[in-house]
Image (tube, rainbow, N blue to C red; front, side, top):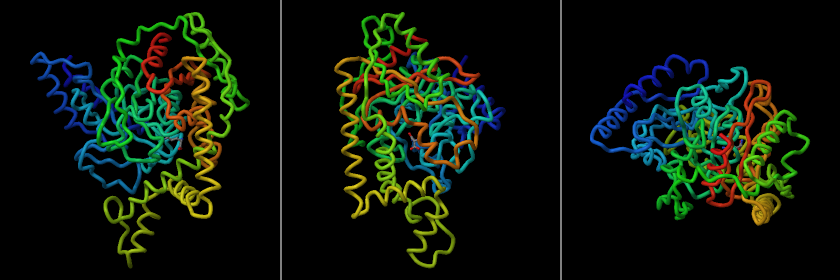
Length: 453
Ligand code: GLN
């Protein structure tokens, strides 16, 4: 098949079936066909690249030149980005074909894809359930066969949790591995882009192109990039896998626990050694994150003021009214909640009690991992405490929703790489195993997932 034929098949599938899932906000057929034809021509000239001609979807948080980049917010419903994010640019340069932009929680704040201005996404395994979030559109699109792979972003679990709930493999790279340039900022010290696909091998191919130093991102790291695909053959013999006791606590659905234990037994058969470990500050991760992430969000989102870009209210009476009403009308409830919490935590009288305290706790959480990685090569546990839950089930209770990320959030606070891989079904819904690695040790995680798959 030519890339053009394959691309047309995916575009037809999206047109025919995405009404059931709502996984795309914007589909880009003209761009896709042009890129597919260019890839076919490159192949005819004898140029080859692994991603050449492969259709992918981008989470609608990555800026795409000339294409609406909404972040699933009314605030950016009319925003046409004037440039490409580095990730988008690199994918295009490698010959990948952009099918469109996928749905997400508004400004990536959420765990269920229910806060999108464009409506919720449905889980292809069970359409009454959420796909997870915030990269729920990317996850649903791949799980439904509407795209072979997609990009996502992960600030507290947003690649791994939807990957787990939709039966996919998703990788959050080490902070600094993938450029954040052109990725609309939520919490800048936590945000990281990464791949979502069916297999670890596909993720390895995508990461190879996404990774790398970028002078336009001041936190990008200039660290050698291994050949991720070549490293997939590394077997599990002699590797030590740490099992943190805190990740199997009371809130874990027993069916998920069983699926995770069964997968760990497989790793043992493959020659890995399972080691009981402790990450003592685990229970502080969610409260720590819900100070730091909103604090950073409150400053990042101050740029949406109705003046420079995005939504502007009708007939403002003066500048103050312009700011106030544009933001009041342009942002949804969850985004406003985060801005309020973050502004409070950063305000002069409370800074020491909240923000500084959270930074100190963050240090302790990082130290837990540093200590554990003296003893083990990988840390493993469930990705989520439960399988996909019902649409509407948790929307009215933010704290329950925040606990969805109880096993994923500490990893962002520590800046470490982690992936989720599917390890069977609970009542017909996918369960995810999370593998956490040392800084810049993505290759080991991808290999470990590949060995299982
Ligand atoms: N669910 C978490 C939150 O709501 C994480 C989201 C993310 O990783 N973008 O903040």
